[in-house]
Length: 318
Length: 318
Image (cartoon, rainbow over all chains, first blue to last red; front, side, top):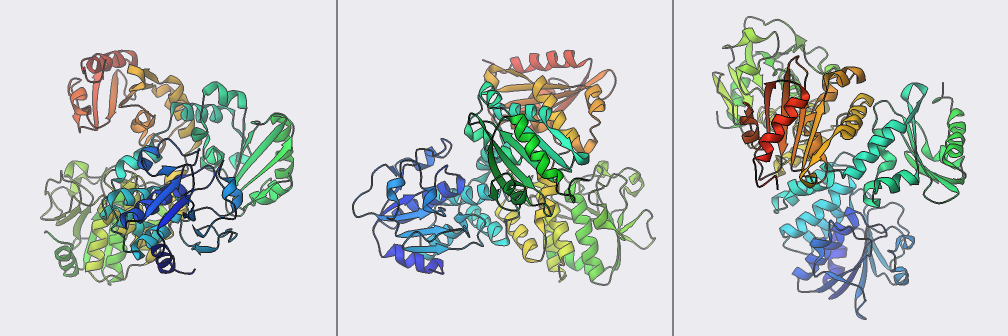
């Protein structure tokens, strides 16, 4: 499928739906599922969201009455924002091979579903869901508009990230005109941090090591500290990007020992410095701006190994 | 003047302009001045920005060739984003009483200029400048679009604040379609923090006192610490809001001793709690959500005085 209109016709021709979100569900997959489910129901269809056991508690009130844990026999299986079946939610592995439609914006989509509507130009999959709902003639309610807003705002870091496009802003404008109350959403998602997260950042700042005149920042994050501060996985979300939020840092890394005997690297880089090259040298991989790797050893050993790799980049290490 | 079209006709009828920004210039007043100056020049007019001595160095490269420190005799005086003449820039106090046009979005505007275009529904004054440029028939260049984007994104905290409207998003979308490269702007303005600012936050977290089950957070910020960390005024920008970014905090306050023998309170509150009432009890004032006060004494005495006031609010202090 090339266009939202095709997906709209396809959905209009069916009546029973089960919508799947991806493992470690973020605001995009969750918001897409909510908006699509409510949109289909508004047309008199029978639609449900499969209860992903990892749904964030902050979104659960928006999903009241939309969740189920089983699959009705006649339900059409739709995945939203899920690039591959390796991202099936926990407990939903059995749905592999059953998807009839996937709506997604990841260029890495593997076309595992019988039909796929893919638009990689969308910053959030929510932009695409908005177009599909509009093409189905859904009268978009404030609840649907808020779900779409959550989807696109979370996937763009509240319009900060480089994927934000004119269409992203236009979709956000449409959500507001359709009645989305965005101020409390923005405050909850982008302004408030838990004490645990703030204390974690505070301790990370104290432990951060800077090299090359402050262009390289490396922080070891001991699991002991994570447990001592009682920080949740939600709090740890995006912590890998923290060193790169410091002025002047071109290469930032967080090293964790969350699994015994192993250390995990998360590397983030500015344009011109390739995180995936650094991580490949440690047996990992990823993208140019964000990559990861994992090796046996302690935090101190991990840090030494990473420094050895970085020192070989002569454009960085002068 | 009620409409951008009127201001556009007024500007089109004149040929020489000096544009003024307000004291402690932020991204809104600066971006407005740049966009308006470039827009007027693109129509063949002679337009300049008065060189505010407090312009942030981050915006200076965008103002190359646009700045002057004197006023040509025939120059029409235009103020942007300046609500009252008490906000005249440092060294520009002599311009009081000379303004022929003010373009602004503050409801508190005192109509000090001969003509005023005021639209308080605009989140940033940049939204209004965009409308004026469009009404003048200016072909908006990427440079103008970026200046407008800086204006509206800074005044909305990158679209997070409650003033963000559908029109704000639509103006941002227009800026992107007109060629504004927003990713580097967003990173510079909203993602990066200096080491000084991060260290300051880290120390503030360590010193923060919580009361009433974490709903009240008070932080004393000694001038000694500010100087020790070498943090700039830019770094201190918005530090007053920091306690309220902690989850669960309804009333947040920062107390500073930047002037000898005195302490200054900045209080920020959630809806339902009135910062200006608290500050009025300390001889200050402000808005419901953000207010300030100043009393003689030390940080410890200031904190005790504030606690006494807060304890009297029985909806807060239980």
